[in-house]
Length: 367
Image (cartoon, rainbow, N blue to C red; front, side, top):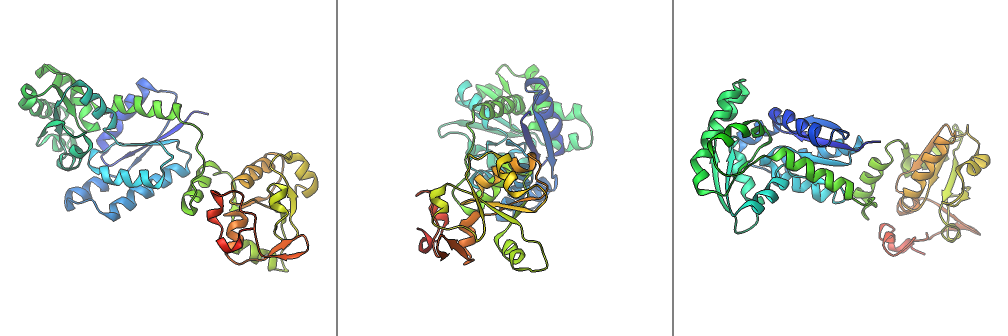
């Protein structure tokens, strides 16, 4: 299955250039386009990036990742700090700022860089993305974006070329700072004698390199990050949280689910959920189904929910009709004070799996 890359836009004019670049350089990738042009309108009105703007970017990224995106490319240059907030939230995901690759290309091409923008906030936020010691010559192509907004592409390209021409004599390279400016590159190249760089082509090459060289990610060791990772990697697996499962088990009017513990025997020897069927991660799903049947509801669990998510997916593929994964696993169940069973009766402790993952279990409950 091809990788899915989420392209998140704050300007409608960025959509066509980046999709054209993907079509040329990475046509087999699956693209999804998310456009919220209120982002740029709100920034232009307030002139400030704040926590609420960070939250909006995180929400867009979360939606994209929940659809199965392998990486995210933002296409508007004025929101660098907000993109940093997304990176902090999902450090294991390739998240690319619009100009990263072009900036790398530009600093390799020369020390003096003419930075051309048509959206004024870009020139406020983007210079900080260049390495120290870079000599930047920022120029706003006034009126160019307005021309593009009213459909006058020729005037847009002319104004961008004129802006670049004003600083070209002082520069080693011209960098067009926005995706929407890529269309003006031919006009700029006609009036300057230095290399002209655009963002889309460099961005596609950089994203492809990151995706194809990435090692399989492992879940982050924190509750929020773990939940997000499971939601992305097992979006086809239905889950149930500990309070809902406890309520189900206590309801005499409902047929109870078959509980399946998919941990190692040493973990299961410390404690389980009462009445759970114990299997191991290496057991064949078909063997497990022979013990549970395919018609009864099944709830699988492990320490934190990763091993059980794998089993839930495999059981569904093998014919089980109603399988749920216990969100947060036995760690979350125990942390909430819900009952545990041991070999000789009620239990008070849980096997911590290992030193790294046991931090998700209350220290007083660790065996």
